[in-house]
Length: 137
Image (cartoon, rainbow, N blue to C red; front, side):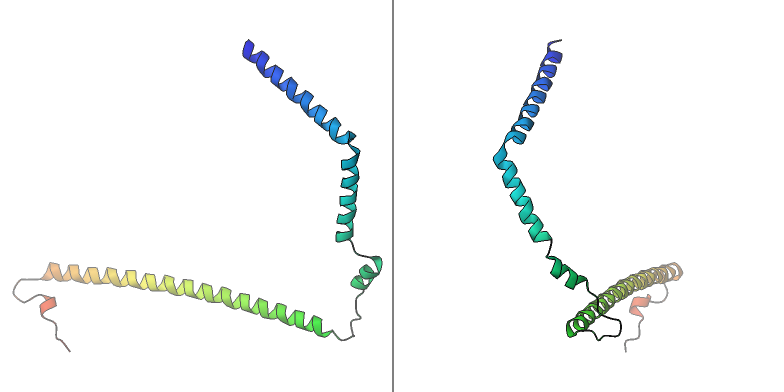
């Protein structure tokens, strides 16, 4: 029974402490003014002036020529996309070549083992084995 009382007492003290802290923060005037000033600074950093925003949102006409910066930016995006595509396909090709090489190596190993087993099975003991009967070029 005593451990229940200890748990209830600790929970009650935690609730009282939290409520006192909440009231203390809301009652302090200096921190609220500092918080408002900080939010104003953040607004000035995030939002731009109306004139800048209207110039930013103005669109050029469809028939007007693009500026040099727009053309350069589009060309950089195209070149980057081409480079990424080329890297992707090169990586895919290398992975496929490695896969094919592994498959060929495994097939070659299996066929070599099969030939060796056939030679061992059919060796009659009269002629020298294949390793000693090779014709060297």
